[in-house]
Amino acid sequence: IYNADSFVINGGKIASNTAVTSGGGIENDGTCAMYGGSIGGESAEEANMAYLGGGGCIYSGTFTMYGGVIQKNTGVDGGGIENEANLILQGGTVSYNYAAMQGGGITNRGNLVIGDGTKIVTNASGTGEGEHKSGGVYWIVGESTSVSVSGEVTIMGNTTNNEEANLVIYGNGVVSAKSLSEQ
Image (cartoon, rainbow, N blue to C red; front, side):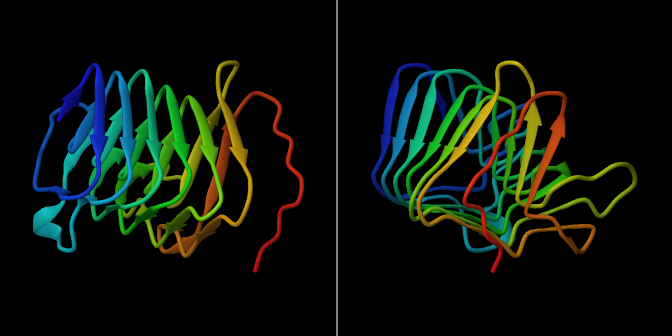
C-alpha cells in the first residue's frame, strides 16, 4: 500500500508483499492511523519485505498506531518500521521482525513517540557480516530527530547477533532520559 493522503487500518492483514526499496507492507507519505489488524503475519510466508521498512516505511507525514500488530516482517534497515518522519505508537505490538543491519523492530531517523501500552518485543537484527545494531529500536540521533517515551512501555527480548539489544542510540546530539527502569 502506498498512502499519500489519509488511510485508516481497522482490521485485516497486510501480508506477503515485497518492495525493492521501501515500505514492504505500507509506505506512508500522508496520514495513517492503525487501530487493529496486522502488518505482516504469523508465519515467514506472510512477511512483508523491503530494503527500508519491511513492514512499513514512514517516509513523510504521520503514522499513528493505537492497536494491532506489526510482526514477522524483514528488511535490511528497519525490519518492522523505518521512520523518517513522524511515528506515534500509542499501543499495539511490534514483534518478531528482522533487519539484516539495524533496527529489527524500528529504525528511527525522524520523530518517534512511544506511549502507554506499546510493546516492542522479540525483534532481531544482524546475523551476517558487518556492523549490526539494535534488535529493538535503533535511534539515529540528529538535529531533526526526537524520541519521547511515556507510560507503561515494554521494550524487551530484542537481540542483535543473539545478544540482548533493546535500544541503541547512535550519532551526535543530545539525549536526555528520566524515569527509566530495567526489569
